[in-house]
Image (cartoon, rainbow, N blue to C red; front, side, top):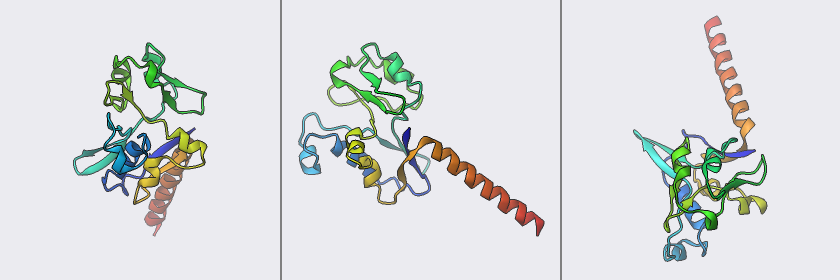
Length: 171
């Protein structure tokens, strides 16, 4: 399964990902027209600051998807094990069950009283494009990667760090 990974060392907190996300979810697909829509399109990613460190947060498309399990109307669902968690706005009753169970706190109500959540820009993925938030990042801090690749990269980085420490100690 693919996920959006963020290199927090590269993120400058510019909120370009938020803006691109909202525009991609608008009817007009342009900034000038999107701000005139009613209700205004909501971003599915939110950049929060912890101390001075910006951290973009969005749905993690959990394997067990507690939001989907808690949804009484099945407005949150998955098409298969490799697909993201989708949201059917027409089925949402705005009960906030998903908000209560989301371990990352990324579920929230959009204008109009129903939920808004990331679907990895599924329409863009089907066209061979990356999600709008990934494409908009000026520092390439956000990438669409295989979930297992994140673990492999961390493992490789840790091995390199440990081998460097061992070499340093031998000198």
